[in-house]
Image 1 (cartoon, rainbow, N blue to C red):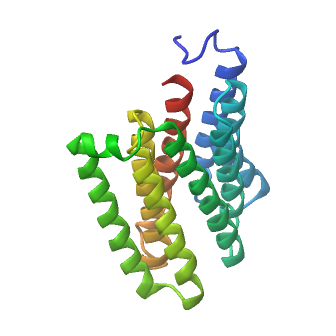
Image 2: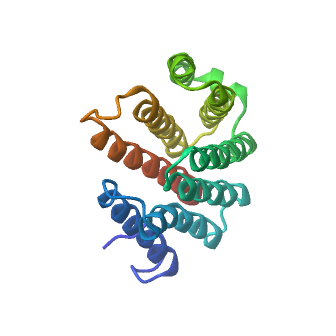
Length: 224
């Protein structure tokens, strides 16, 4: 079996990646169940193991920090209630800011963004997506959530834009998947009726897109 890192399946890096993938799959199968510590652990470990992998492989410290903050956000979001949601929102907000710094530090700047038309097209699509989502959410959420959500939307848009300044298609793809996951999460949480039959597949899609995003960004830095 061909593995992404040196050594076989039992090499530390490959074993850690497999551990992360297994945790992600376990969480996917428990999405419809009530929140439990085991379920929270599976969700948290999926991305926490990516942070461990990045550290083991000598990845940028900012990558390790962003993944660790994301894992903390996952722990919050694995529980119910507005306080847990706000805790997750805050954790991911800081994670996105760290990603922005990482992408800007490792990227080619605005010159790269302007050099290729496809980058500009994706940037425009990201901006339109963010504006539409914010406009839709502004009417549906309570006054106490409007500013936090607006700040979060700005942060993830900045993350997507800064990813476009890197040369890694893995990182760019990961940022697009991340925005798609967050958009679908917001739709499922605030825009879809509580009894909607669509909630089940939307929750699964949110998780699949999100984990794929974190995995793509991680591998983009470690293998690129």
